[in-house]
Image 1 (spheres, helix red, strand yellow):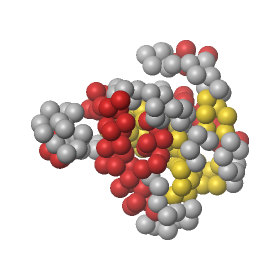
Image 2: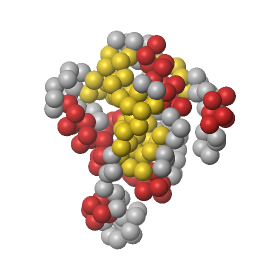
Image 3: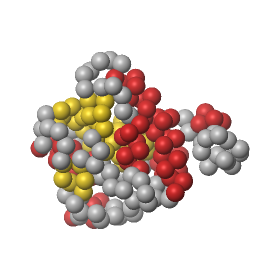
Amino acid sequence: MRCYSCAKLSFSIICKECRESIFVPNTSTREIGTLDVISFYKYKTVEPLLLTKHKPEGYRIYKALADMILKPFMEEFVENDIGDVYIIGVDEYVKSGYSHVAILTESMKTKTSKPLHSSLLAENRVNYSGKDLQFRLTNPRNFRYTGKKDIDAILVDDIITTGITLQEAHKVLSNNGVNVLFALTLADVDE
């Protein structure tokens, strides 16, 4: 196979050279209301990769990003023996044969961190891509949470733009007895 980024022959969809030069994480934290959102890349750095999320190659690309970034993050996080923590993906609907957010949450599974797949789903399936803040505010996702209550959790999504989706998800989880420790995203659109 060839590296998706540089087209050199590679055993992985993202070759070692690209991982070590182009896709080095640049971690940042943004506060959205009372929620800290940790992002690993600026959106422009990984935009071509993230835009594959509903294409067949997107599965392999999201899996590679999850294994490169989220898996090691979670392994280091649980070393502090904080007890059980649950991983909740934002809107893990299946599209094109897989859920790109579920790939991210599944990579974070350890002995003490457990994904709660498809437990936070939007009842309003409107597409926010390219829409302004006013559109997002007048068309909320209307999340429904069906997972465990009275737990500690980490909220996961692929991209943060305005933060409206994560804010709404955080509110729904809090109203259901979920203590959201923080949120993780692969990329932050905020420049």
